[in-house]
Image (cartoon, rainbow over all chains, first blue to last red; front, top):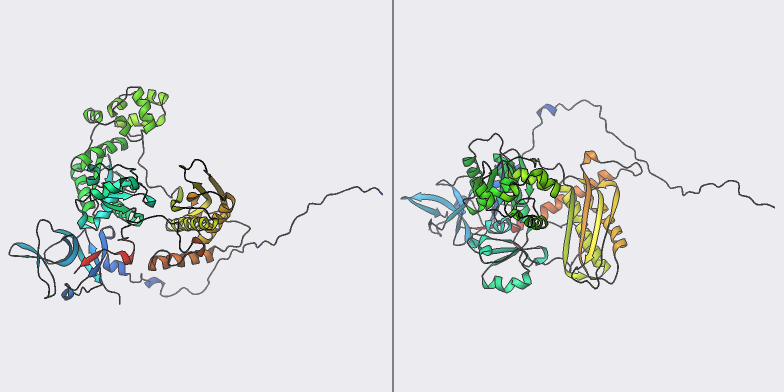
Length: 141
Length: 412
C-alpha cells in the first residue's frame, strides 16, 4: 500500500485564555442630597504647615519649655520663613546645638528665655543664630 | 533674560543645615559605597581635597585635618533639593530643574533684576538653609558663566551683554557644553578662552565640529539657541544601580540584590506615577579585575506597562537567570526601567484578565505602610533579610526630613 500524506494539519496547544471582561459601574439611583454640601475632611497639615518648603519638624528633648506646653518628646513645627519677632518661640543654635526658647528683648538686650523656673535665660550674642520660628507643637501619646 | 540658580556645595550644605556645630568646619561627602569624594565644602576645597579622591587613600589626611566625613544621604539631599526648587518657584513661575542642585529660571518680563536676584538668593537661603548663587544672562550658556562669577563674588551676577573681558577670563573647556574631548580639539586650533570661542564663525564651527558647538558660539554672543524647557512631562528612565560592599559570587545573594534594586525602581515609578514598558538588568564584575571580567545586560518588554513591585521583581529574576554565570566575583548590578508612560497612555493587553486593580491596591497599601512606619517595614522576602552585600555607608547622617525617628533634636 502506498502511504502518502495528503494533508498536514497544524498542531497547536489549545490554551485556555481568560478574556477580560470590562465592567463599568453605572449607578442609576437618586443622586445623594448631600452632594452639594460636600466639604473636604479636616487635614492636620493645613492646620500646622503654612509654608511647606520652609517648614521643618524637630524633636524636643528636655523640659525647659514646660510652661509653653512644649514637653519632652514633642514634635516642633518650625517655619524658617517667619520673622523672629520678640515674644515668639524660636529654635536657635547655641553652643553648637539647637535649642528651643522664647525670644525676648529686655533692656535693649536679646535673650532666649526658658519657660521653666529651674532654667535661666541665655543671652543672645553674635554667635547665636536664630534657626527658625516655632509655629506649633505636637505630642502623640 | 534667564537665570541659573545653583546651590553652593549642595551635599555638604545639606549636611550642615541641621548641624550648627559644623559651621566653618570642612566637610566631604563620599560616593555610594564610601568609594571616593563626590562633594566638598568650601573649607575642604581650600585644604586641597579633590573630587574623585579615593577614600581609603585620603582617609588619614582627612582625619589629620579634622574633616567631617559623610556617606551620601540621598533621602536628605532629595528632600532639600525639592524645598529649594519649590522656593525658587515662589518667585518665578517657570522653573526648569536641571539637576539635583541647579535650576534655570525664565525671568522674561521681570523688572529690576538686580534686587530680584538678591531677594531670591536671600529668601532661598533663609527658608531652606541652603546657600545658592545666581547668574543672570540672555542665554543659558552665558548664565552658566555669570554663575561662576557670582560664586566668586557676592553670590549674584548679571550679564546684560557678553562682556569680552569676562569671556577672556573663562577657559574654553569650562564653557557649558564643551567637553574634555572638544577642549583638546579647540586647543589645537588655538582656541583657549570663551572669548576665542565666541569669535568663531558659527557656520564654520558647525562644519569643523558639530551643531552643538555652533549653538554654543551663538549663545556666547547672546543669541538664545538652547530653549528654556519646562520640566519634562515624565522621566525617560528610572535607574537603580549600586556597587556591593563585598563581591558577590552566589546566585542567591545576587538574586537578593537584583530583587532589591528592582523593588526600588518600582517604588520610584509609583512616586512619579509612571508605568514601565521595558526592564533592563545589567551585572558586572569589577573592571579592575581584567583577568576574570564579565559584564552583560538584557532587556525585556512587559506584556502591559507596570509599576508593580511583584511583577518587576519577577522580571528581574527571569533576567538574572539568563545573565548569571557562576565563577565570577560580581561587583555591581543595576535595574533600569524604560518606556515610561502615564496611566492614561498605557496600552492594555487583550489576553490577560485585568488584575490591575488588585495589584494597585496592594502596592498602595504597601507604600502607605512604608511611608508611615519607615522604609521596608513591609518588603518582598526575596530581596534579602541580612544583606551582607549591601553597600557600605559608615558615615551616614540621619534622614532629618524624611524619617520620624531621625528628626533633628531641639534641646529644651
